[in-house]
Length: 231
Image (cartoon, rainbow, N blue to C red; front, side, top):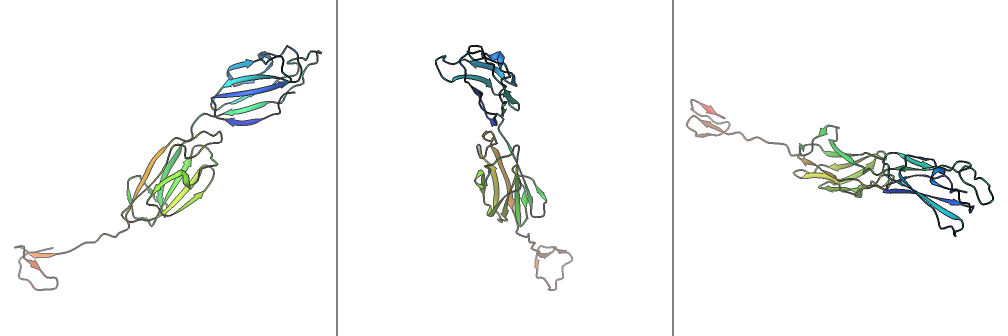
């Protein structure tokens, strides 16, 4: 009998399907194995002295496709002439594409912020959107600077937030380095450069002075005989 049905995601570079043959016949060959989305298949026959016999069927990675094989009824016979029964289907989702992450930011009111801009928000909310679901994207996946009272939250398996309190006069930044997280196949992400926000919560001020036409200073509230008052 062949191994039981299995379906999983594999990163490559190769997907190998081992099959166990209980008989010791000689009729099992690559033509007996219908395969789907299998590129550059390689079939290897075992050492005839082994029991049970083990065959391997190797496919190159085929990103984004489901690679599957099975052995139909009558694909081979044992030495007594008994035909096999159909096997289960063994399928693997080939996934060699590195996941990515997009970073955006907004203030506490939801107003969008462009990277490198100044903002007067009382808090800055970074949002991280992954191109594929991940089970290991955590606060440690984010390299941040000047983020006061950081609060990390998982919105979904592809969406996360990091909230920072304002940090007046400081540049807040957040990035995700290479291999900061992985997709379901175990493929590590590519790096995303830093998103920066200059925190500015200090209200601007204005100073007013007064002088006459000759440049002589005038005290506020006082009298002056100037023909021109310059503020």
